[in-house]
Amino acid sequence: MPCRSMLRRIGFVVLAVMAGGSVLSVRVWADSPQRAESIPSEQTPDGKLHFWLYLPPEYQQQPQKKWPLLLFLHGAGERGSKLQRVLRHGPPKLIHAGKKFPFIVASPQCPGGMNWKKLAPSLVKLLDHLESQYRVDRSRVYVTGLSMGGYGTWHLAALIPQRLAAVVPICGGGDPQAAEKIKSVPVWAFHGGRDRVVPPKRSQEMVQAIKQAGGDARLTIYPQAGHDSWTATYDNPEVYRWLLSHRKVR
Image (tube, rainbow, N blue to C red; front, side, top):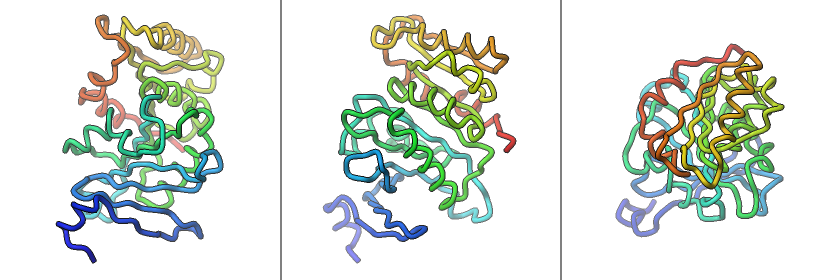
């Protein structure tokens, strides 16, 4: 077994893990609170969906406790085959910097040239995997994402509303016709008032449609912000308290 100093030089250790008959690759990065894992995927070029996994520090100390799960979907700029890119923004960035979360956090990477809608079947399989392999509180499963990941969050909310306790889409958009499907999922959306990449109306029309359908949706607009409305959002402790205040009756 390599010593710690050697691990720092190597960067990570590659392991093979058998789970349900499938071989999952696990990379344990030196001095990192997150580890890189992958599951089989029929949608990706290499046949795998790669993701960062974070377990709360108390996870091993409280073997009977089940934990909320937060799925984070990055933006278009973090697509590719280098998982380190996913650490640029959002919860994985904060975790990498030392922030502790009371969630299990999974942060998958979308391959180049693809989007989260195309990868939705793999994201559902990822949730299945996490719920079967880790102590996930299935009544407290949340999704959040920024830009392309905001679109992905809206899409998952319409695709599997029965599984999600709440969602936080940031500077994204969706199909207002799907409001009837999403209305059972509490939504807190965020957008920059000066966003020229994704117009604020994309969030506004979604929130309005869900409200008209009888759902629970709210929208926060940062009047002076451009496309980056995610930094302030993910730095806001109230966002995480709001997520944790919701449970799904399944």
